Length: 136
Image 1 (tube, rainbow, N blue to C red):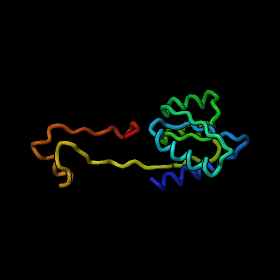
Image 2 (image 1 turned 30 degrees about the vertical axis):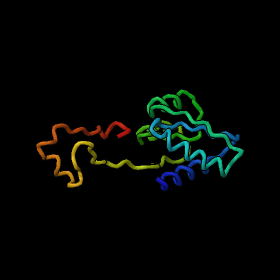
Image 3 (image 1 turned 180 degrees about the vertical axis):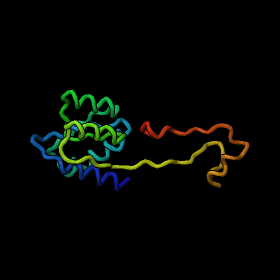
């Protein structure tokens, strides 16, 4: 988590500011981490205001394509910033700021034995997120 904070704060710091407001478009699943990142950045830059617009990455991409002026776009899926870069709506390079991890979890069975527990007859349902659709 600390690595993610450092990377994102570095991205924010690298933005060239014409005004004293940073406009960020961010995937909704970043809501809580952005509060911490913003507080850290503002503690070091008290004169800067941060304006965050949260939403679905696809919807934010459409807003950018329709003229919304953001300084930083933090999508849940790299396909959206790549699309904006391909059609000329970005400056600089697209950077990955975090990687997801699959987690094996249950509140019904003891998973400390590992994935083999899935063959146990007590396990009657298994759910897995669709990896193509963030957040996963």
